[in-house]
Image (cartoon, rainbow, N blue to C red; front, side, top):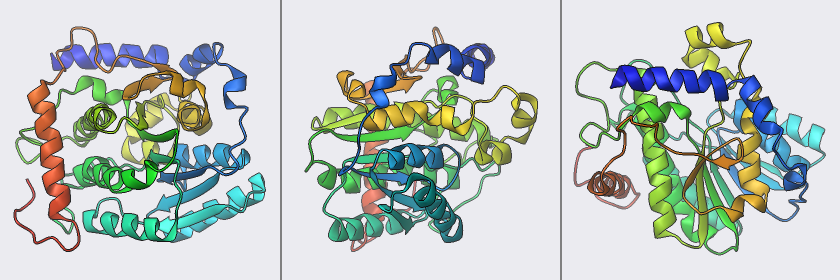
Length: 328
């Protein structure tokens, strides 16, 4: 089944995820969807100093939006901010430093943000990592899981109360088409069984993000949740994490701006809100989150177990809470 999934996924990717796939899809885009003034609306985006995140900030800033850049490296974040302010003539750009692999720091950041800022209309979960050797964080969490899954869960959960204060609030999570080859594995969320594969760990995390999005949409009816696949884009993260893939495909990869297009559309357009909450998007359209005959659907109980485990871990790391269990 793994061979079938990978083969079908790669053929789909060559057809849809490349630059030519974007150009074909873009012929159906409505330009007016993005012809919107974002002045007065507040956005937060993680991993905002490069690649798709940075390209998204540019588009929001050009439309007058207030943007909070949540980044791990201050120097690169400040450089990105200066460039955005200069090119977009928008001074409402703010930098926050946060390591998305550190759960307690995320709780603290979210609490401090809500104390200092009374408004947030859109949260964009973009930061991610693909570490190809299994390693643990200082909190004894597997690094990919800590950043891509638990970090996203905690930041979103912590900011829901602020988002709920505003009409048309949105949460968008940047997933990946690679999740199509993965079935949720709640028995090994931190990949401590068998041989470790960083690419598959990343794809599993991205499957988890899609399920989280679906579950959040059921829990919080007053917020519009979505996940999306940017396609295969030429970004620093892809070049670093997947050097062989990048070398083979670099002439066919999308630009960062093309990868960011659907993310921007989901964040700012009124058209995006015409679709149900909880869907998975590609090139401005909701698309299936499973490949045909790939047998990747989780049961309702497996999805519930994922959310329960994340809740338990998240609470375990909340400041002021006594650690009652070691990470699973």
